[in-house]
Amino acid sequence: MLKIFYTPGTAAFASHIALEEAGADYEAVLVDFKTAEQTKPEYLKINPKGRVPALVTDKGILTETPAILFYIAQMYPEKNLAPLDDPYALAQIQSFNAYICATLHVAHAHKQRGSRWANEESSFADMRSKVTETVSASFRLIENELFKGPWVGGENYSIADPYLFTVSRWMEGDDIDPADFPKIHDHRNRMQDRPAVARVLPLHAR
Image (tube, rainbow, N blue to C red; front, side):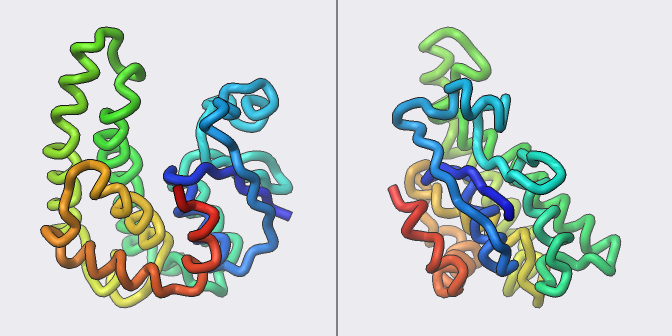
């Protein structure tokens, strides 16, 4: 059985949704960031990065959201969570998820995780002041160029959709009005209506 380690308010929500969409047999394990559980030796044995998500499989442990999402899609091909038979379309989905992971999420992290990149408090404040601008720019690119509609990759729901949904729920906290991004806002509303999302959403409420 799979085991997903998660924390509310984090990108782990995307992998949790994908497991539900796949109908996977799994256990969800809460990592309590409030008590810094992610820094304790017990969790660092699972994920030395001290972050979530982490997915325990029968072959080992996977970390990083794009990798976990792709693994789930491949393990449950009958659920059509990725265009596995179309190399180009699959690469586009992977490109989208990589952009969220490497650019949008990093821009968002500058609000509270400035110590990853600098030491001075003045640097942290400067990073925080830039978050709304940089995160908005990422969402604007998604809205105007990357989002095909009605789902991220077009007509078919995929592993890119729970990832976009997860990060779009951070908009208000970054002082961004979702109404300024009508395609993403509509996507967020439709995602909330999916049964798989409804089943795991209570575990990710903060």
